Image 1 (spheres, one colour):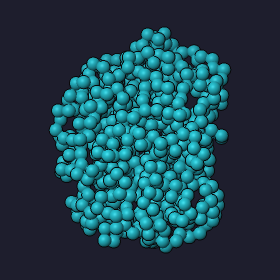
Image 2 (spheres, rainbow, N blue to C red):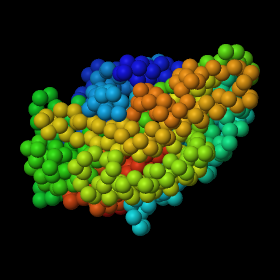
Image 3 (cartoon, one colour):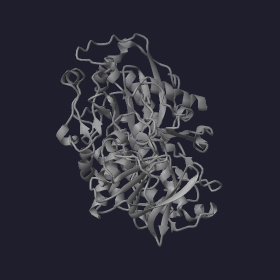
Image 4 (cartoon, one colour):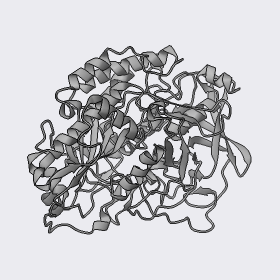
Length: 607
């Protein structure tokens, strides 16, 4: 079973579906482990702010805080400095020291599969190794965050849009390519061109010519809209910008945008140093303890500790610091300083079927595209279908929503959860039963290239997992449990996605190419048979983990408040994807940049 799931991913990577590969140039000889942006010097004993994690969010916050030379910032990163000088297609270096690489606990609904846990272990974090697809969810999906936050919450589309615009410099495609491929965009309504950011969104000079065949066919599917810009609050059949510097077609990521070349004495970076504890005194975060070169060191923060270690490691660090579910901490022999059951709960990720595969028996002839430029500039698939359930399953979406609505809150959650977590899921269930009925919440993603069939991604799984320390070995990698497909609604949704792809391949415009179904096979038609196939193929991670330190009320299992301060602790914030209470229908990097920009302004507001 494992070989099937894992074998498809490198194939998808190689053909550009995920395009996670990269070519690494090593850092210049002599770069010190203790570095600032302007000179190599050892870390100080005290800083105003200590940021745990030099990834997408951590470097963004560090950059914004050090714009004021009055404040000193230390970023402590577990991984290496590295340097990504260029991007190539192929297979990601999953086994390299630049990646975290361990496995989940066995997944009961996937035949005991242990799923690879992969994330960037390099300065820049997962923005350094991701698929470079750079877009955002719909307005309604971010408004769900505000709804879960309670009355007066500013974590919604209206209040996040300025930070999406602040966090990226957008470059449109060249005019010829835009005309030939019908690429439209809305700079004023969706994007920013702020010269004070080093993060870029752009387009290649080349697109696969065969993509026009699929574009023209899919836009005729019932319920498929073609918005002017898929980042302006609505989805459909949309062109996907790339996190790429348009000047030299290299990867644009957190290090290049928020570290390199800033030339600030007050911005220090410490690499290859693993934080294992937030130091608390009388309920206040006062510093961190980390291990480097076999030695334990404690550094003091006079203002705040900001935890940006990502959705996998942020809950582990909180729990090691005595902040988390009391029963778990006691089992691990850790003193309980704050009983906070939501730490490590509410874990979510985008799951997918590697291939609903068809074969063209008559190969299409690529159309001539005079404006097409250099194929080497194309890093990721440029077109995607992001659709709500009414478009995916016009006949069955209402039944699926009703069945989900009728579940009790704890029916398919893990056993032994605190009541606050169950109450929080009840609120999510209420909202997502409504979302299943909405055309403006994208449940389905399909990359669109020149081939037939493709991945089917579930953008809003309703199953909920966990990330917790191992009580027997708390300092080892955490126990990650996706609890994939434990809620049968997820299987129902994936079955409908398979059927949508079949309907798409049956479009009249495509019949001249004689599409033939390879997997799951034309004879697999019943709900039961398709459901069994889904379970045999499903991969629960597109490497977009979120939710393990959710921004929700404490009584709903939340971990941080509206200002991202950890409940029960002063001067400790979480700023990374773990604060997202629910997934959005998009790859997550642009959202993490935006929430980090907003967090930086919140922090500056209390300076």
